Length: 89
Length: 411
Figure 1 (cartoon, rainbow over the protein chains, first blue to last red):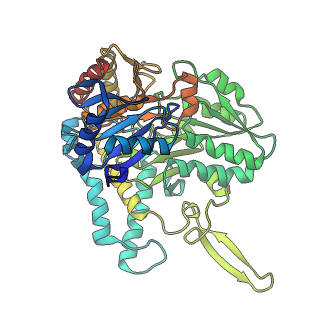
Figure 2 (figure 1 turned 180 degrees about the vertical axis):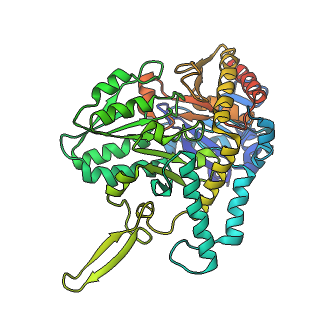
Figure 3 (figure 1 turned 135 degrees about the horizontal axis):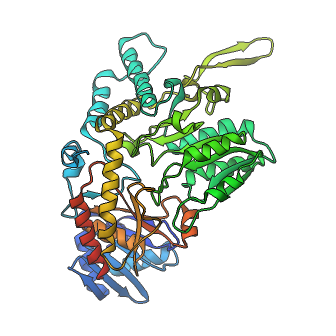
């Protein structure tokens, strides 16, 4: 079974009032993670196929071709993990 | 003027690509890249001279001691201190300020005394003073900052009185790059019988700094922001003040003698001479060697040239950044009063989005509070993105940066 840990190298809370969370995918898994997320989430807009504004359920986030994503308005780490496991399953 | 193309040849990291794009490193206010001369000096130390310093008679220890002491002398000359007795090696600016807060503050502050700092300070020049205030019951007072990020000198100087014991101010703001007139503030501090501590983390790497001219009592700065390794920094202090202070940490190296008295059943201790009195334990010898090489590198370029190059880059960057209609630049844009640090934002995007976007194109900038939350509160900003330049940055890199900003603005 696929776990979030298989894909995620690190998560980091942003420094600032926004309290966003940045997720960095493992280097050797980033392309797969990006592909999976793009298949699951709804694309709002993108630039040159490298930056994607997405929504998934009530969540909006931005995914970068470099293998990073920024999630907004999450309650806590559990909510992030639940969201990621749905997106990456 | 310096030639950044020639300089870039010395920085191996600048040849790498990030996300398939040539690396553009604009996060120099956080840490600088290292030239091969510094990398080689560190390698040479470990390959040929590694030993502990002081109190050994063998050849390697003597070589290591000579290198480590030479590093202190080199740094002292760089800032025009009297000599190595005035240059204490620490981990970085943060530790330097904590050293003063604890070793001086705990023994010299009491209820009713005041410490004056500004609202533009990095947290490292706020938090230690708040901690010491909690212990000693001395009060911390904050000087205000204008909307454009410049210091409100009137507000700041009006806070300084006979109650003031210490005045703390950054020489250059790590958020806006604004250069403060620390000489003027130091004079006011001294007229009121207070000491002045200058946070030089963003000035010493980027402009000529002469401690005699500034007449500062303390100057704190970090090696890693000036081409040196991490984990090494400097506290400059006037010799008589450092001599009058109690040590910060206790242990080996910082003592002259520890003698057990059978009558009192206690040890009597005498301190070592400066600067070793403040360098307890085995120091970061290799860090000192790396810092010495970094200082020599900067001296070869010339600090006036470093300053002029960054001023040129900032003048070049500002209109190009503004050509992206959604790009906002915060703080004054007067390059006569600021260094090569540009805080900015893109309408509709958080600073982290901007930084991630730029990262995708191989451009490294920092986002967030930059450890200066009070200043962001003054600006009423939740965070900022920050581009900061150094000796190896070029106009072509700024052109590319501006091009990508325009692309971000279209998102």
